[in-house]
Length: 540
Image 1: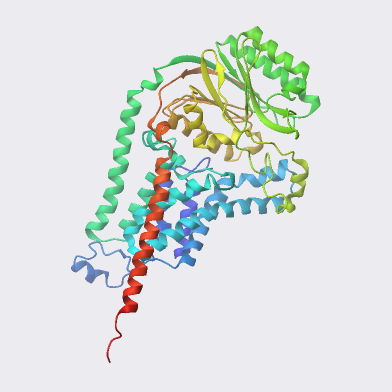
Image 2: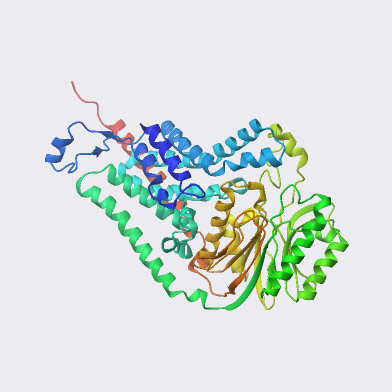
């Protein structure tokens, strides 16, 4: 039964995210796992307990004091594997289709990734079970802190992979999602996990304690939702600042054509024509996707001149992605970069991508991952950038995030603290086909708009391209695999949210609280053992 509960939690977690899921599943997703970790069992004399007021509803009791460490780790691992296979299954397809890796090995690589990511829920389960064994089912209310602590570490250890954090499941539930403007996505993760913990506590309790569990969940969610509705109804962030009409170019270039020399002219003229059309419709700032030029911008004189002439002719800044070669040092380095060309045709700034995609832009642990040798041989490692760069758009400063790195909350916060007044992100999601990845990616990016109280504008090669306002409302949005130029209104803003000021305080507090709780339980248990050892043996 416990393994079935762990499996159920994994399924519910996976179904909390697009494109197959719904955010409602997230609120109950962790409850089955937590019930399993508490070591519950049915009590045969529930009727008698009810007469004594111990179990008014005669359902469940948690007389057990949690499961063993080994079983807890296994339960968490099961939950995690199902969770991450269900949300990152598309990585295998990418490796097979574009990396030249045989399907069996691509599937193995995907499972290894899911297994690694599952270690974090497994660690959560291990610690929660330890706390339950030490203090009883009340320790379930520490589960949100433990979950957030490990989720935060997942985003940073070994470069991090902060894909589909629990809180991001609520980005489309806008009244609740406003909490991210104060506590970030990890604050939302704590809220969602708290509801599951409260429901698990209620299911394991009786009488008044059960009502406390259900009541706590309902009260907290209602309070957050009401506050969120009031924040959105104010709407001041959609009236403040300076309006800026942006043109977002979705060229819809097939992945197989992007570096085909025979397609280069068609690709480039497509972007030029779509840019002219966007400016005719009023665009004051035009954005092309990641790696949009079919040449390296600084390595192709003809192409470079054409882009600069286009910016001068149209009198608009153009932001686009193109690889950059740096020969200034002893080692030649290749960067995934974004260039901002001013209306005068000059280079206003160059941003080099900081967080690279594992197995896409570099191979981690090459010596160990010899079995993906076709991909290793075909892939030229990119070098990571070292700093956020502000890009001038008129008198304003904007930033950009390239592809996957928009999922890092701290990077976007760094940009806002550095003066960014508009969030931009450019990406090429053509790799992911019709899988869940483009939809997940768009929602992960949308969370940054709420956290920072900024408009976010996104140009994607094959979609999803769009504009998101500071409350997370999608102003415009394209479909995937359509050629379209979106032109819409954003605003450049200078105010800062609470989250921009305090950062991931919830995550730090969760780490501290988890550590204190673990140490406290260890000391209590150690003290009890000492007293038992010192007690005189009973006389016979």
